[in-house]
Image (cartoon, rainbow, N blue to C red; front, side, top):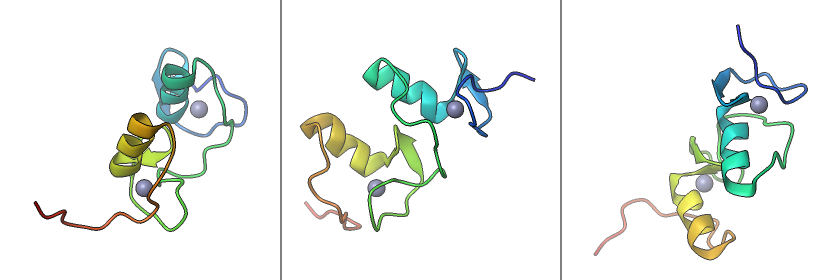
Length: 81
Ligand SMILES: [Zn+2]
Ligand SMILES: [Zn+2]
């Protein structure tokens, strides 16, 4: 079985020598920025959504990509238009 190449990483192998979260880190930063990945839950405080990209849920990941940082911690359900 292949394993993530990052030391102490318990995540299942995903692609190019890394698990999914580490693979995404390398994709986005060009390197592994955080060795330990706790859970597949968004790293934003108070947010308990499943990770979509990097360490963020879909909504926070979009914020991060757009702004380069997290601006709104709380994301309300059901954005009305
Ligand atoms: Zn890993
Ligand atoms: Zn989140």
